[in-house]
Amino acid sequence: MDLKHGEQHLTTHLEPEDVDACIEGIECVYLGTQIAQLADNVRGRT
Image (cartoon, rainbow, N blue to C red; front, side):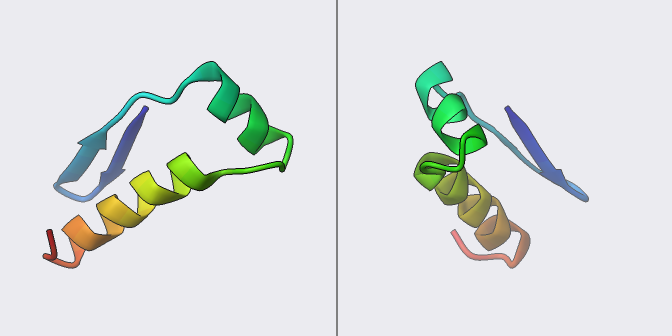
């Protein structure tokens, strides 16, 4: 999975089980963590 915002770019891998759980509305913890990391990078935090 590639997350991009302007010049910021984060590449990560999601397990099929995690994707399925997120799509089914059960749990999106790992995806949320990755989005939060990208948001921190965009804001200049590491």
